[in-house]
Length: 110
Image 1: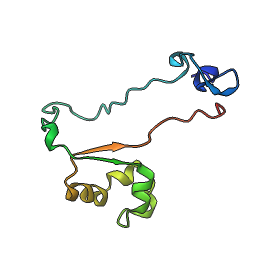
Image 2 (image 1 turned 90 degrees about the vertical axis):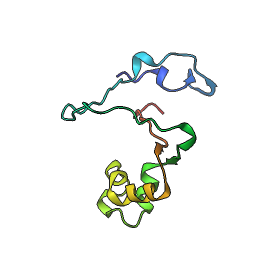
Image 3 (image 1 turned 30 degrees about the vertical axis):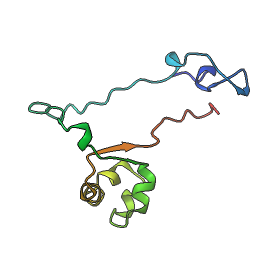
Image 4 (image 1 turned 45 degrees about the vertical axis):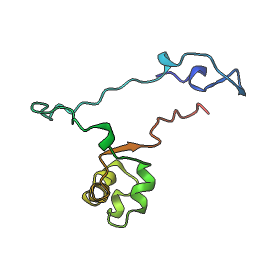
């Protein structure tokens, strides 16, 4: 990963002028696969879109405010996966969780 001008989003130090530079060569790519997980007998759930309940949440905000998430897990992805958080969402009938915002911060790019 390089820390060049393409990752800034603006042109030549002018914060009000959007950049047209392509940052693809300067940002990391990743694919996360747990090799210990057996993918056999797994497939996408076939839930009709009309039956989908999407819950948009911010990991830190959701887990920091949940009284049953242990304090040491608050503000973390592990806190979102804690049984109390999962139970809360399933009790609401949520079928899909969308995490907001999830992004990488490049130190020194701002």
